Length: 265
View 1 (cartoon, rainbow, N blue to C red):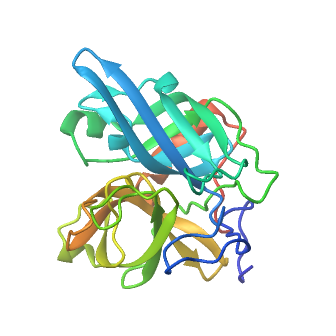
View 2 (view 1 turned 135 degrees about the horizontal axis):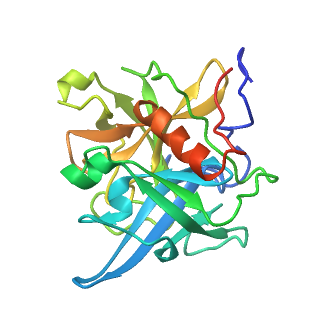
């Protein structure tokens, strides 16, 4: 641990297991908070589905992008959402994967009014309580204050496509540098990162971008993948989690006040 502690256990990484391949594949269950989220929704206009990333923030709440659970102005029904925890390689299951469902889906009104990428964030209240008793499943840290990450490297992860090819079967990770938002025209609720050395692609949407906080030696979530996920963009835009901290905690309090996020103390 660093000089500061956290209010509850969060943001740890499991370093044992398979070695990184070509500097991109994560170790099996390296990041306990990562979630593989799937939607399958039927409407009068036809069927639609998504495959996205997400992050665990409490034993009953998962954070993702609104565009992962909304089609047009239609929010996916909870019964049409499936979330996989402790997942690494879809082609080679470890037997430790956990599948949970959704009970409620929360999206910002501004996103529904103004459309794609405005306040692109969603909180999912899970059907089951997530068990944190094993090291392979647990929450990422969430901070109220915006983290000092401009011009610093942060870590992104997901099952998205690689160089505009097929989606990866295994969880991958990479590093990106946070830019001054004035350089990319980001809104106050967005974070801008360079696409080098790593970028996110289709399939990474909703997944977390995290920073190893030197004060706690734990990973805190900076943002979540929003727009620019085409693998070749000059820079990438993600949704700033701290901007929505109060809203996230309103959702938590309104659904299960017995749980909370973990943060630096």
